[in-house]
Image (tube, rainbow, N blue to C red; front, side, top):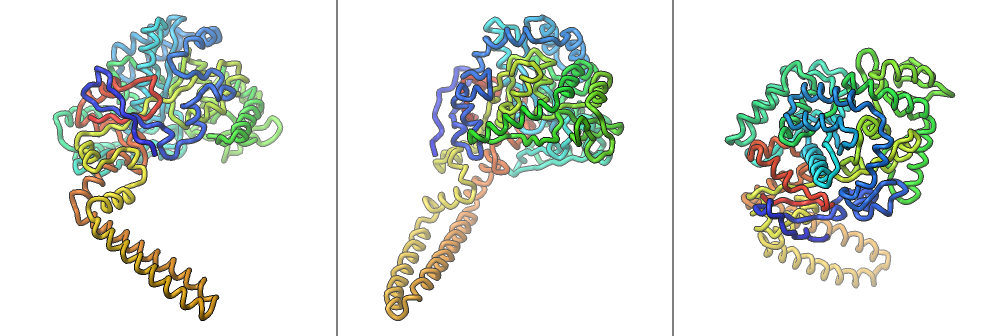
Length: 560
């Protein structure tokens, strides 16, 4: 495994140590994502507007603007209404006014509405879009950052938990499920009840108390309060955290946004069969090139979800020639009926994962989209959706990716000569290696000597029994393996017990893994931003923004 690559910090980040880790050295990354990061031009049949760097997208913008047909005035009026409700700052409304200009483009990202904003990468996405818009403006292209809050998604379990690091260095998990929750409701519509107060209280009882704790707690209590919708609470929190950056939030469930979406919904209904065929064909081509298809699209797939009278979001499925049925329901439609509903009641529909990017880019003059590895993978499948619906395929790039290492964890890394890459072997293996190397070398030698002596004696026995009966040789070999296995298991238990006996080392390693690889995955995929806001206040958001380097495609380790 490669070591992290040392890299000089920029002047604004002189107080930080910054190192890089290629995604190819991080476990569980897809081959498609790695190749896209390393050589996007080699994948242009799946990503027609791929370029090596996001700052090279200017050539795509004129063609996109020529195809853009959405009424900017109506769009911006809706965005003003949405962001007023979220308590956005002045710079956001300045950007909405700038978006009225026919030459202005949008840098788009988005995420599901997660509890207290969900994992850190939500914040990284938002600030990556802000930085890209800033660069485009400096280069003479008018641009604004837009965050699509995926309030229509209905997998509430996926967004109803948040993770923090408590005052003892342990992982703190919060789960939330309001008593009135109706299964399959869009997460944006889920109404928060009074039980959220107890959850917030528990979080701040377990977090370290700092000069910022009261302010952060008051923010969460104000936004995540009884009677507020989950989607609004998410958006208000994100708008507050990013208030100085002019981030525009868009809620696809807004009535004005739904009306503007009607034409693309209609087009998706009319072309549904061709869309499914195109995506399936693209998926097959990916697999034939030894890549994976991120989204399974079957023959009965329909690109839109149905919202019933109770507000539940349910899949539509093809049941026969020109016949579509709401899943788990007897209601059936023809293409013409669905088209008429899309035109008159667009709030009855929401796009599935294959259609959503096209809806985003129909509504917005999108210059590029920033997503995670999984999003980049499914963009490879939906290029056909763009083509069939006569839309230019949006360039997609990976959001910025960080692990923040606090001073006490940096000292532990230095003490044991560790880095993030070495931690991927897991807590147990890391602990065993450290015990072997420093804590208990005498025990390691003892076990090695015992294993050597056992093997020597078994070899003597082997020579003797083989002369008596050759069939005993195989039997002895099997028993040798069992003996060595049990000795190795005992060795492992002994070394782990030795590590536990050294309470300081055991605690330091456990806290290190909790902070840097919580739940066995990158910090950004679990830990909520409140963990760091509670310690460092608004400065932490500034540090993220300063650390963004759009030319750097690697994961970066920021040592505070």
